[in-house]
Length: 79
Image (cartoon, rainbow, N blue to C red):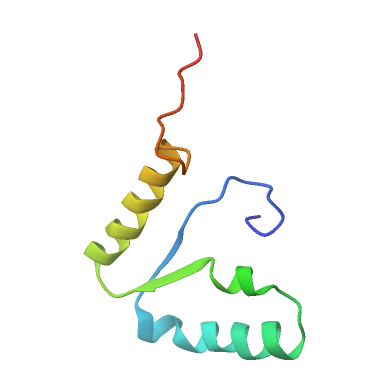
């Protein structure tokens, strides 16, 4: 859904780097590089982490970026 823009972009946090490593390697080596079935951007959609603190940092950074519309300005509230 993220790739086809059917939902707003959100960080996909994968907890347990060692656990997710084989899948991410497969996606990069085969789906991306060998078969060109996804783009380089698609490979960056996932954020493997090991701790709750790392996950929260990614989520809060994304939230702040959205809140400021990525331009440092807060969006206007609709009345």
